[in-house]
Length: 198
Ligand SMILES: [Zn+2]
Image: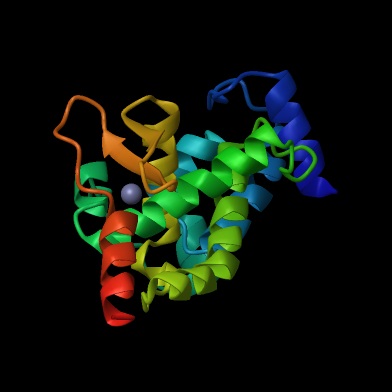
C-alpha cells in the first residue's frame, strides 16, 4: 500500500523528483523505496536516479542496511550485456516480458510511473520463465543478468537504443540500433536441438 501511494505521488508530481522539491513526507517515502531497492541488490547510482535522494544519503542508507560499503563504479554498457548467446537470449526474454506486462496492463497497480518497480516485476517473471529455456536445451540461470543489468537493458529499450523485431524462426530478437544485427540466438539453438534429434 505504501509503495502504491509513493508511486501515485511520483506519477502525479514529476517523472524525476528533484531533491529540492521533496518535502519531509516525500523524503520518508523515498527512503522506504530506497531501502527496498537496497535489499533487492540495486546499485546506489540507480537508486539515486529513481528516488531523487542524494548520493551520500543513499550510500549511508545502504551501509546501514547491509553493514558494508556499497559497490561503486560504472554500470555495464548495454552492448556488453548482450555479447553472448545466452545473455542475448535472456535479455530478449526480459524485454518480451516487460512488453507483455506493459501492453496487457499487468504491472502492479501504481507501478506505471515507477520504472524500477517495473524492472523488478519483469525480472521476477524472468526468474520464473527461465525454465522454459530448457525447450532450447539451454542451461541458463536468470542470474546471468543481474537486476542492475536488467535496469540498464530496459532503460536502453525505452530510450530506443535497443529494439525488438520478429525473426523468421518466430521468436523475438534484439539488436542495438545503429549497429550490425547479431545472429538470432533462438535460431542457433533450434538448429542445435534439431541436429541432436537426427
Ligand atoms: Zn530466430
